[in-house]
Length: 252
Image 1 (spheres, rainbow, N blue to C red):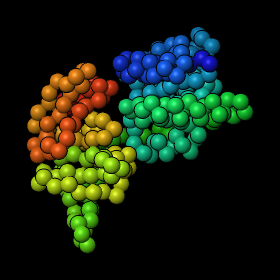
Image 2 (image 1 turned 180 degrees about the vertical axis):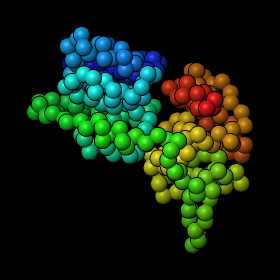
Image 3 (image 1 turned 90 degrees about the vertical axis):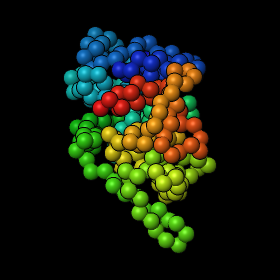
Image 4 (image 1 turned 45 degrees about the vertical axis):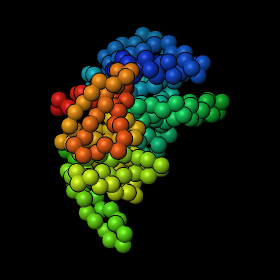
């Protein structure tokens, strides 16, 4: 099987390459931009499978498909919200949510392998998918959450929430009053509702509010530890694959 990775973050690309190697799947090419990818596809035989990041350094990766007629199967690697992910599902496209999990990667590859023998093709309507990738700064985001306290419902303003986190299959909001509230939604569902300039997903387990960050400390394996104003129930660690994005987010 011929595999290429298109990803502008070289550490993320190398990590995915190592994960595939552990599954005895070798990648032949690493590409990092729209321009580089177009030139490569115009001059090389197309691969069986592409791992494709959506937002590259010089534009959206959909621009590649607008220029070159690519027949390869595609597995997206993305941090986009649930609306885009729903679109990928409807178009029979596999996706991996960053930071990529080993089990998710194995399942995505298994879906691809199941499709190969029957030569099932996938028609990708990239224009429709792009319409669902709404500019995050033009959207309306959730300003408050309702939580159940005993027999009562309580409203919590989003700005008063220091972090969202998952634990023991539950999703919690921790407020600047030092209280935890159990939510009905998963972190994945909440992600689409949070204002991206205020909240950042530092790991699969935590979203943090930029206004609640008290300190940031270097941690093992090139990671960061986050200290919040009030939350101290457990360590908040920025995953190594998210550190660069986290630093960029801090400076926006």
